[in-house]
Length: 570
Image (cartoon, rainbow, N blue to C red; front, side, top):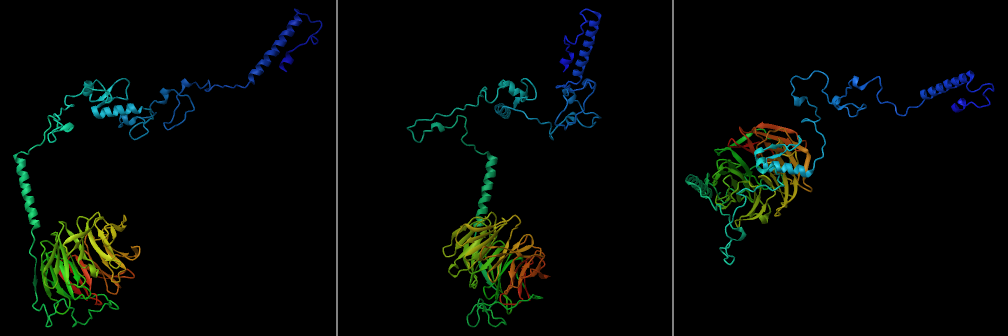
């Protein structure tokens, strides 16, 4: 349209208008002015495809743009000098230049960089071997570290050959003649300057000699066997019919030969007798099998005593054969023999009636617990838990070890036969409980949880279904020994303080009560069904370490403590 508007045809031009005339010149000027106005309009409304980024009226040099240090994206093309100028405002007067520097980590400003693995390992190993390396923060060859060493090596790295030291190449002796079998040294000949042996000086030799003498004396002292003996304290060891004190009495108000427990048991209320014969604390008490008419006690005074429970309640016999404290004792099935173990590393088999020592057994380790195999055909076998994390089975007929169980990670504290004597349950200082098959040295099941504590005492219930364990977190835990062998979490007995002591746990014959001593010398009695603490009274001045409920009595309990006394409650 613009072209058409500016176009003038010959027909529209007046006939009288000639070129060069004044009128023609005026028409030409008018047409030029119209052409200029159209060009201005085109320029004014033309679309600018590339506008200026920064407006002219806001010159970049006239102002400074502030950028936050946490900004990730820039919308203006800011100069490097302005971008890295210090922050506006006062400078912290107590910060160093290093603390004022910008950083994106606690140690400084970390940026990604591509470094050759070979160059990095080369400088790293050179610094470890020679003590110097190239400084990566500067341009050129600038070294850091042992400059003197660098000058000696000429700045060479570990991958470059350096001057060998004089002592690097050691000469060996002549290998000798291969035909000489005894004298041939071969490539294994010693170095020329190699010292074959070094002899201690006189002072060192004197110290070594004294040490060997002390060690020899100590070993001889440990090997010395004490003479075992026993002493009877009563004259009538045999009655008018020739029966010994092991014979079950029939002149008491309870039938001691029956197998059924009492119909109902009751809580003891008073002290009826005290046995005092040990000069130090009593460590364990055991009742005579089935009848319970005799009481066997071991003590820290290295002695073992047997007492009457009924009639006159006298001390019948004392067994002397240990040089250190007696740790544990155990009767066989018929009570004619018992075994004892002590901190003198000896296990001894005794004849209950005569007091004769029938056997001595030791593997140079401290036995912590011992048990006869309850089976009638295995009464010649007993098992002991040792301080070296093992359980060892001895044959008393052959006087030799027939089996070892080595799976615990701590000293073995208790051994209990369960499931008709087919399985063994052991506890240890490693805070675990393991179940074994008899005569198989690999545990069939391991119970070890993070919340468990060491269990230094365990007792099987009279019905053979439950195992009560004394846990070191002041609790008594109950495990079901039949089937899968797992904890009964509904029966947890609390309320006593036993941490640090292996206080014995016991049941009433009718399974209605659970009994245990504690570190305060108190006797605690819980109800088996409700786990409620029924009774708690002071039994001993020191730790009440053991308790035994008489099997044919409704409310009689024997307790022992570290005060050296054994008490009978009813």
